[in-house]
Length: 114
Image 1 (spheres, rainbow, N blue to C red):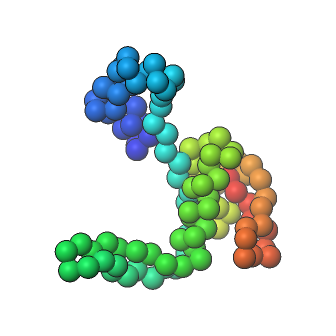
Image 2: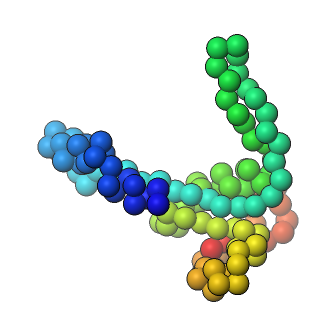
């Protein structure tokens, strides 16, 4: 839904159709990557009296961030961890294709990515 929204965005279309931008950055395109993992996390408020943001801390949040970063290396918009695929319904699991098996920094357990 998010990726389709990016393609339909009127504001982004103005940039896509801007001839000055097209000359400076040929084939300009907004891309987003998503890394999905499952697990526990601790939420905390970080900021000052003027601005407060939520922050989430856990190895599981770090795994999601690593998966998101890896979308660029694999050239895909979405990567799922094996743990995430395992909690998906039986009708969804067959639609997920394993593309690699990796061991991430700080872990000794290999994990499939889909």
